[in-house]
Length: 511
Image 1 (cartoon, rainbow, N blue to C red):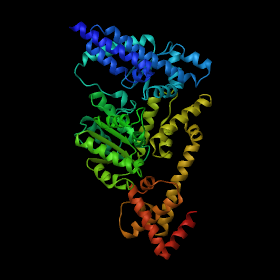
Image 2: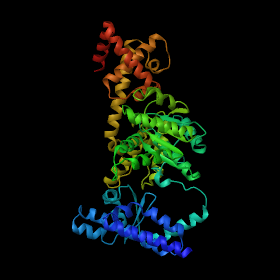
Image 3: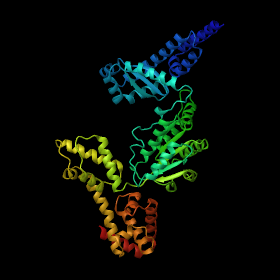
């Protein structure tokens, strides 16, 4: 009976192959669904083991031939024969195309120069996006052995989807530098990582650019992936919007069902959603509506949601009210600009991680920490620039004078901006006969609060500084306080000629 069954199945696939070949649909049918057929054949796992292997190999070979034809049209014959002549496709599985290359130089060159071209060709042939993995022949055997060992070890355990998470492995809690300005945010992030979906859901992290929001978000995702089998997805709001817009596309069948299924599976069949820069959804009404439904679906299923923005939920005026309300359901944390001590520690960690051949003395570190802004990326970039300058100058010893020369473009910009705000504060304080310390303080008496609002207004008018930066220079005020002050002075100028004259006089003094 079993032989009869197998014979019937064999005949079925034989007829199907012939039919599709005659109708010129061989490539479409077998290239898009190789995994489906291999799964069926493996299920029967009898006399069809050989047939299964031959069919899958045949599908991949045909697919790769068509991919190469697409690539060939884009390259010179010399480039094509050099880099693609001995390269072949091994497997397509779980969104990854495994490509075998003959030598290490092929591996590096293809990855560095032809990844986008190969992905585009694969997409054109299959209608699907694939990540690429280039392997040498000896690496294939090693990889297969690891997969077998892993499957034997984790029988019945769901697989973690690290390769689809978009996480950057270099961002972890261990290399996040903690100080007074960010310790609360770091502690909240670690609590969420240890108990996703249970502690602080959603977690909303906000603060100015370059203060470590993205680092913390990736650190949460990496911790969860390393310590559980939960499915984690990190995306920017732009990526979410692009995926949503993609729903309107139509596939080769003339429908968009595949794209809808892809979108729902990507964003709802997960355990942790991390979305960066949510403020960029402002004005995208339909995308906001879809994110609302995605948020609700995940939240109701006790899935963890982590969101970042450059401003607090209440200040996201271009987002729907129902979204802003939901962002406050969990925990909202602010990351403040690093103080002087934290800036020095960031610089020291950057130097230690860089393994530079030359030492950087403490007075240079203090000089950079005192004069470079609060942006962590700019702080780290100053070290890279300094070391590069030393190398270009023939390996000159890094000392304070060299640092001043190497960073003069960085420093001059930072100092002039800092002095602009400081100068405005000084001139306004003198006019109203109060001290600069008063204007930077938290005192709320009218004789201090009103001059402070005028100074904030002038800083916004006469400098290129952002609201958060101005707030920092006024004793760490929230950017919403600065916005309110600016709006108040703008309104009063229109109705109060005396105030308008005072503002003009102060502007002339400042200029």
